[in-house]
Length: 176
Image (cartoon, rainbow, N blue to C red; front, top):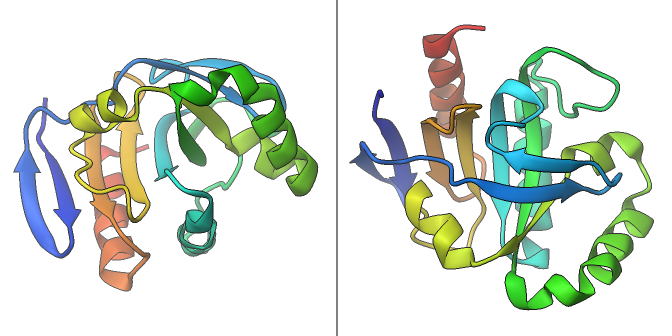
């Protein structure tokens, strides 16, 4: 497996063990996923958020990546090579009110394209972050992930042009 490069607060860290953990999720349209094997594209750009106030960072990443021609939703598509997905990661203690939380998000979003790309994950946040090398939850993290769980590239923080250039280079390096 090729090693993943992750950028935390400007420092580049090489982590040969970076892998997307197996987790169950559900998009806001109600479709169940077992990730990473059921990601909606061969290679997914996962925008990972931990707090509601991070939505601005999420939207900025999605908007900027979409400007490069990468689909920003799996809605109505099949056999995608690349797609952007949002992954809100929520502590498992909120699992009992998942319908309320997910329903509230869906009611405020309403756009089926956004609902289809938003896959909520409930469980141990630490167990999710550790294999991905996510050291901080104060900003969003972005990971380029294959369906086999290998993480090709990653960063944490706000969108930046160097980040976009690196992300695109990572996608070019793995092909369609």
